Amino acid sequence: MLTVREALDFLLAAARPVQDVEQVATLAANGRVLAADQVSGIDVPGFDNTQMDGYAVRSADCAGGAATLTVSQRIPAGHVGQPLQPGTAARIFTGAFIPEGADAVVMQEQCEAAGDSVTIRHTPAAGEWIRRRGEDITAGSVILPAGTRLRSQELGLAASVGLAELPVRRKLRVAVFFTGDELTMPGEPLAPGGIYNSNRFTLRALLENMGCEIADYGIVPDSLDATRAVLREAAAGNDLIITSGGVSVGEEDHIKPAVEAEGRLNMWQIAVKPGKPLAFGEVGQAFFLGLPGNPVSSFVTFLLFVRPFMLRLQGATGAPPRSYALRADFAFKGDRRNEFLRARINDAGGLDLFPNQSSGVLTSTVWGDGLIDNPPGQAIQPGDIVRFIPFNALLH
Ligand SMILES: Nc1nc2c(c(=O)[nH]1)N[C@H]1C(S)=C(S)[C@@H](COP(=O)(O)OP(=O)(O)OC[C@H]3O[C@@H](n4cnc5c(N)ncnc54)[C@H](O)[C@@H]3O)O[C@H]1N2
Ligand code: MOO
Ligand SMILES: [Mg+2]
Image (cartoon, rainbow, N blue to C red; front, side):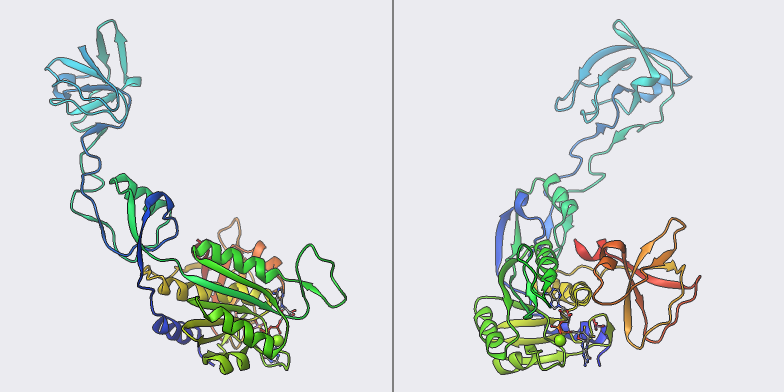
């Protein structure tokens, strides 16, 4: 069996990023991947401005504790004042242009206004409360490199330099289906032996978070012919086919033979728990990823393998999710496979383990804050330092 690292390297090497680029409104670019470096045409801030409501002064006029200055002008944000004459102050409001000659702002809590003058009860340092032109971004600098996946922060940064549109790779087209004669949709009554198709809801939401176009073929019965037929149909017009269930070794598991009949199986079985029978292949021009049916296995293998593979297909170049060294406040016997344990950060800054780590127990994924990446054969004693990957590093 491949190790997690070997399997991930294999997948990433196989991924061919989509090449089509489209121009989209920055307001509609959430979750997309930049196709070219973005360069700022302006300095940000574009001009020296005040960080506080108060008075713009010449700091030399305020040396020695208290100074009374004539208020010569009033400068709201969005307006440009006149040069500041010595011995005067300008009433100024957060974000407003610092007038020529002024070199500091005193916040109004340290001032007393009386008629046309103001007494400054503070000795400002030169530059105090002034946001300098270009202190965030200088014109000509790359603010976001090609391959950046656009989140709220990146979109705000692009907008701050005035970019109304961005070049992005086209969305991935992803087909999904769910194998199992026992599967029932919520809203329908459960027959004896039936279970609800929870994987459809988990996977659909994970895919929506990835910002792709989803073709959902729903529930497919446990039959080789039916599985082959849906695979064939899904391969046309999609970049990737993702399936749930039927990927293990039982007679009712038809995914592997179906992929072998309709295309190629390139990888199967990883020394990972949960998720051992994960399969990877190609059907026509579409990639194929078969996730195990157990709900936690399917969720965890999506986070560990499908997501990085999809990011690579989208042309994203970001660093892999970080793990953090945290203290285990529990004992665990370890497993021969590399196990990803659902755990929660406790108030003492250590990790608690969800008591039932079975791959069918979805409650563990809701209770947990993330996954402990526990190497093969590694027992854990209370106080040991383990590697923890927060879900939020894997979910946006
Ligand atoms: N003899 C062996 N049996 C199994 C092995 C093995 O190595 N030898 N591997 C086990 C492991 S590990 C896993 S993981 C599962 C993977 O099973 P499949 O991918 O074949 O999935 P199914 O058999 O179809 O279903 C497994 C389990 O999950 C439930 N399920 C399926 N689909 C859904 C869904 N959409 N929503 C909710 N739950 C679902 C299904 O009812 C089964 O209980 O194989 C082990 N067996
Ligand atoms: O690899 Mo399976 O997910 O352990 O039950
Ligand atoms: Mg099975």
